[in-house]
Image (cartoon, rainbow, N blue to C red; front, side, top):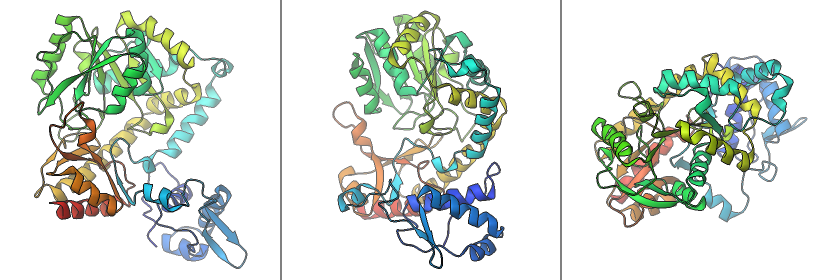
Amino acid sequence: MDLHLEADPGEGLRAGLERALRDAVREGRLVEGARLPATRELARELDVSRGTVKAAYDQLVAEGYLTARQGSGTVVAPLSIVGSAPRDDQARARVPLYDLRPGSPDVGVFPSAAWLRAVRRAVADAPSSAYDYGDPRGHIALRTTLSDYLGRARGVVAPPERIVVVSGAVQGLSLLARVLDGGTFGMEDPGLPFHRDVVRRAGGRVVAVPVDEWGVDVDGVQKVDALVVTPAHQYPTGVTLHPARRRAVGEWARACGALVVEDDYDGEFRYDRQPVGALQGMTPGQVVYLGTASKTLGPALRLGWMVLPPHLVDAVVDAKLHSDHSTEVVGQLALADLITSHAYDRHVRACRLRYRRRRDRLVARLGERWRVRGIAAGLHALVEVDSEERVLALAEAEGLAVGRLGDHWHGEAKGQGLVVGYGTPREGTYPEALEMLARVLELGH
């Protein structure tokens, strides 16, 4: 039984074994009723102590993933006990065997040990006032830390007083739409449809702005209050905004007196060179910068940040106050500690290498037969196909989930392709998922 137990410098042997077993149950590699090796046998195979294996088994029994009876060994718990596993056939059909949908990192490499250490230090050092109602702008410790980090890592002009901590890019976009009160947002076409819905539900209007091989094209764009762009790695085409277009966006914003909303999507993950600095650094008075820890750490943390032009700070803080009052503080303090200790930088570098290897493997496997675009950065690539419908039908039949370019157009589709999230699968399942994708593409060709 291959548990795909990869070593993590920041993770102990027992924690690594627990994670490997937990992932194997969640992903269906260890099915209900499967008998696990005896503790002595597995300890010998992994070259660890029997006590380490027994402690890992005991932990997963306590969590409900495994059951153990004297004389009967340790087995995977019934699916009704493991709450995330569906029982009925219809629910099973919705859980893909191979998940290459875009939008998520490999959460299996979340730095649990480093995060736990950061939380412990944060809680130990936090004054009692940290447990009172928080500042709607975010805790000053995190805002000060982000000011330094964003300046050195992304080239963002980010004084602490202009940073507002939010739960993610979605909340940032929603707050801005509320502040602009019925304003018109230019949004990339193709682009993420959920973000368009967020703007509309907050009272904003949406108009399409075309994207080509150079990125977003502002030529001819008029009468919008804000332009939402993803210059580091456009979603879903994957193009990085061309230097000439970067200049054009800044000149357009100054000429029109409009805002640019920079969603720094996948900004830390550039593979062909050092990450390109944020657009905000060129025109900080016109750009609202949105960043999150969702891709670098994990979306479950719900930690993001806005860097605002001075004239918007008070209005956005007021909207945040009346939205959810403030973002929870312990996570903010832990993230500040993680960044200050440089554990965050080490984790991002390790992830960049890991995702680059996955990107290289995808290009090597598919690049000779199909056009693969958007590979210079990020956690997804666009594979052009002749018929999305045919390929996606084959994919569904094989239990493969993958993104569809057609869902991202504002109106009529102007191209067809698969949006492949190579960052999503766990490390051990990625090769199988990639092979299944290649098979489906061959069948659908």
